[in-house]
Image 1 (cartoon, rainbow, N blue to C red):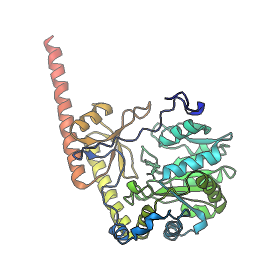
Image 2 (image 1 turned 30 degrees about the horizontal axis):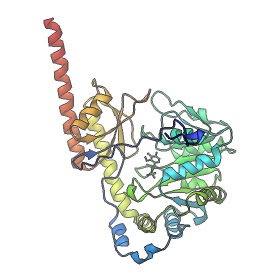
Image 3 (image 1 turned 180 degrees about the vertical axis):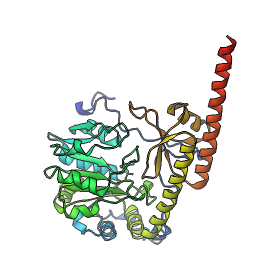
Image 4 (image 1 turned 45 degrees about the horizontal axis):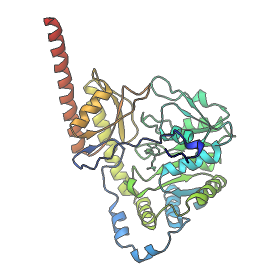
Length: 368
Ligand code: PMP
């Protein structure tokens, strides 16, 4: 840290991303990326783009991209804000509504970015503990007097609230902003976008990083009332109005239009997720009821930290959080069929190694 750093940012560590190894021989299941390439229509759109235009700045209003989002979701363009990934939009929302008291409320176990961003930028927040089974207690949010931020489905637990349950939260908080982070909504869930017509205080945030296989293009969006979109647009245009490159805007339009491809990919992921969840359960793992493209599992006997380390030694990366209530769990992304087969094969070997080490230990202690 230099001696010049503003007081507010001293000692702040930033959000820890999942490892991104240079080596390509890892099976990378630690960032919930899609195992599928972007839609062929995305490739075609980029291949036929007029690259001479790159000498010009991009469209700062992201008009075509926002139009494609509006059409795909059945909302009007003035209800849509787009930016370079959903993290940055979440950041704008936290700043827009959270600098004054009473600030935000979000669950204690959720996407870690909310907490880290809030601590870094001075957003006021309180965390509400999830129930022991990681479910949300809706009563905690009734008339809570704060703005609310909920990842739905939640990460890293994978659990989901129905649209009716989110509506209960909205009904109980007409004077607060309610943000629903739908990064994983396309993996078999109901979106709350239709509720934006009824609740002007609702902000739904989605990303093209997961179901649309465009994590590297950095594209996300918010859907809300035009008044809220105006608030967010003011923050965005004062920070980085050119945040989405022309190439990414082209990719985003093509991806939003190819709903059939998105559904085909998410359908495969959902089916594989459910069958791998059964494989884990059969081996004695505790497995949460994931509605996402990842599984949150707790191994039998062996600690979650040791299981994650053993996977890494076997060239498989998973995500481990050393938090008080989640340290018995590991989060693994649902990859391709062959990656999942390898994950299960290596898991069997790890569990067998563990059993052998236990047997050795009890044998050694019998000899003492
Ligand atoms: N929300 C949740 C719940 C996430 O897991 C992620 C991905 N780490 C994001 C938002 C951010 O996604 P992106 O910035 O790639 O759009």
